[in-house]
Length: 161
Image (cartoon, rainbow, N blue to C red):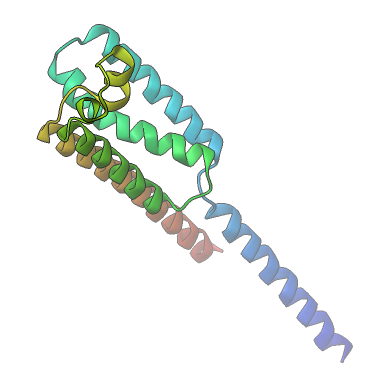
């Protein structure tokens, strides 16, 4: 009886340690890493805004990066599933582009200014929709790949033990 209890305790201890290790290895990226990446992307966006006026880099690559920046900011502030965050950011970007298409400033009787151009953009462009989609596709591929690598490392570690 004592031997069975002792073996059960050892088994439970071992299982608990394995579960804890799995949980630690498979935990999501910490918020501070998302914040650090958001800071880097924001710096790149500022450099693009200052040095690349009216070029392909500013118009297309900037839109590609802005959805990545928004995603990283959402993930650094909120506990939300990565795919839900990515798709929400994409819907938000599409919505802002839709507001440009309906010329919301004119509808509301507002004048264009630097602030409104920064928030809503200047005009509707299908290339923006494509850039937003490619940016979120990039986020999805990177996040999914990261999770696959984490799972592969976990399986490899358990096989070697």
